[in-house]
Length: 254
Ligand code: NAP
Image (cartoon, rainbow, N blue to C red; front, side, top):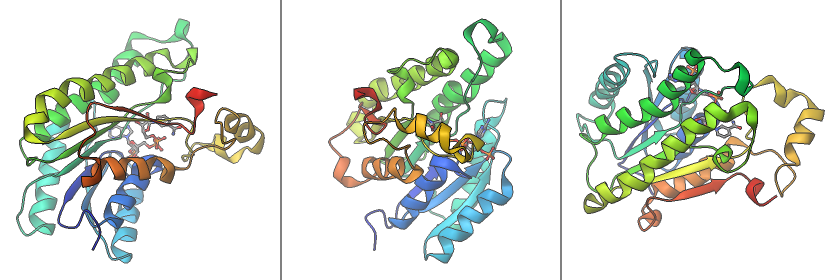
């Protein structure tokens, strides 16, 4: 029995990277996890089947976020999965807004279309996912939004991305107050450089440079961030809300 036994969780962008690690960790703690993805159906299916092989519970949910109808598609899939896997109990106890895209273009070259896309996926979608999730979330629920150390650490190539992450951090502050009476906590977790499937992590020289940004002189692993999210999702974090949790391996102190 894990500390999340009997709970349900939705992790957006859980087909790979940090979201995958969060889904696996929450399932390891006992939650029934909805593994959300946009295009990587096979990868998401592998995440869900891996969880089940280890004795956990999971199902996949497809929805492209940042496009019209995204929230309806996501919650239709979630509700179908909950009906099937949770004996008809439709409540959502834990929401992790993790899905996101980076910018990677110089400020002079960022187009209005690129900017709108970043806002749509990274900021607008989490806002409306929360709005919809709250209909299904019982008192004592948990919301964690994945931000970025780039709201505190300058990288001019990522101004537009960092702006969207600053926007996402506002969800914790204001929703914490709004949802306090229901005992629902809302927090931001801000990773630093974290290994994902980006090919740059296959280049030892690049990894060495990125590692130097952390006071621990290594890049983050998805599980480093997942452990922080799992703590915030647990009952032990009931007194933490509206918080910004730096999960960058001390990059902001470096
Ligand atoms: P990743 O490996 O690139 O995975 C992104 C996930 O988000 C995938 O599951 C992807 O689904 C999903 N996704 C992307 N665009 C989507 C869309 N439009 N609609 C729905 N789903 C979408 O990402 P990551 O590096 O683990 O990052 C996860 C979160 O942490 C992001 O919010 C990112 O900004 C933040 N972060 C990451 C780092 C880092 O160094 N990795 C640092 C700071 C913050 P598909 O696979 O189906 O495309």
